[in-house]
Picture 1: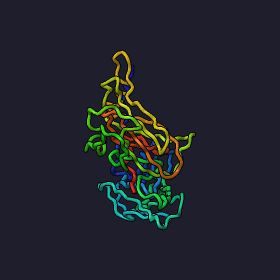
Picture 2: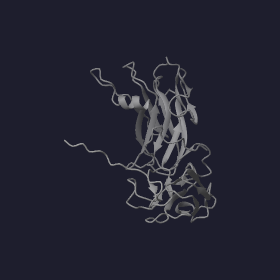
Picture 3: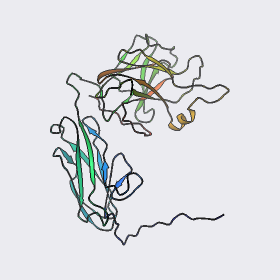
Picture 4: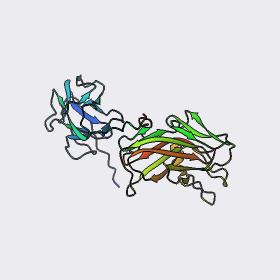
Length: 330
């Protein structure tokens, strides 16, 4: 048997890095330039930012020091409608990282999809082995029609909704209504039926939460949208009344979903370990619909159903603990 120690590495702060003094990273990736790392191809000097559109958040670039020399940096885009929170500045080895936010003048950007190239220069260059990095920014300038007055709007192939921000409650029920539980769950709050002693509800007479939304992307049968509900923890305490909800888009037939699947023999429900780690159940159904304005309907069929968040994934949702930030609501 041999004992092998791991390789010993250190930073020589008296010698300049072969990559230069300025490092760059962007939102949505672990890659950085210039230099080599396991997150992009060898010696790549290019990064692609997350797509930006009218209804999403601003994108940002991080600048950090990697060498021993003070430097002056400048940032510029090849499109005049792309601007920055800072266009130039100084950076020293002991300075904190600098975040530069990207702004788009949507009144001047071309309609539809386009790409802007961003260059960042350093007064000390990029070392002996690298040239100036190039950042690519996908831009989507698509607007909802004037006829859509209120609701959530798709951004980056995603719609994310906090449960309490419903458009309306449609109800014929006299036995139950919805209440908001402040500060419950991971992000904002939750919605549940009240009273807790209410009988089981149905899609014909029970109250429904309705959420208006608009998509630019069609969810076809070949690639349907995934609708994920983040729900409170719980168990089927009464086997005759398992926790379940119903969901529908527009006038489609509602789908009833039992999201806690019990096992026999005293075993815990399927997915219990993940639910405990996440402090929430997650339940996903698929749906098809065309681009345009729609209405999402959700029925809590038992008082123990606690809805925290709804995420409609049209192909853009990225893995995260809290889920995507809430979409813009007109």
